[in-house]
Image 1 (spheres, one colour):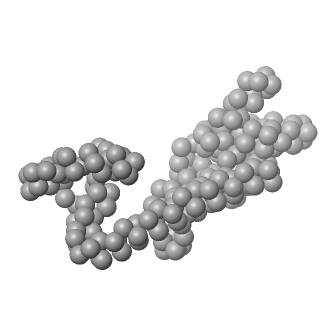
Image 2 (tube, helix red, strand yellow; image 1 turned 135 degrees about the horizontal axis):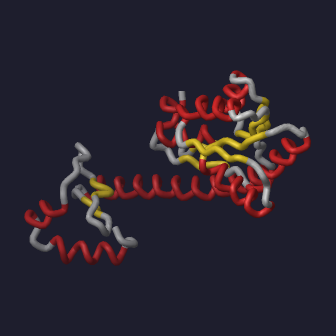
Image 3 (cartoon, helix red, strand yellow; image 1 turned 45 degrees about the horizontal axis):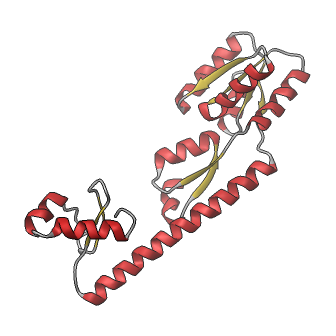
Length: 212
């Protein structure tokens, strides 16, 4: 569903495991809602109040903060880090087999699998402050993306008016724009052979449009 709809949006906002999966699936920029220290601490506090053994499980974006909290407050808790979705069920079963009855984890799949293997999940909820900060960051990134698209449209319009063809390279000589109809990629070495003065022209372009 995300793959088919991603091209319709300038960016996607997601959290935790969902953000990681989407990043691997589509090329559309993903703004990740962070799992903050205060959010994790709130969930750990809830688990402690139940007076039952518990562990923490999640991706590194969550467990790194959990480890900082553990070290800072000198908490006696076990933290399990997974790197991909396929590790989740095995890790939750390991937590259950180690004698834990509660797991502090993310929402969605982790919650469902934890219940299936016999654990009581406590979800790390995202605070309103974290959501607001993420939305502000997404708006900023979105404006940059839209401006970039408009700039590209403008350059294409200019090339259509001038009737000339253009190729633009980045500082490390990667082609970032061309106005050829077949959108082909032409190595800069070939351009240098075809156009004796391309090196001089390239230096002028680099100075005028921020490295490209």
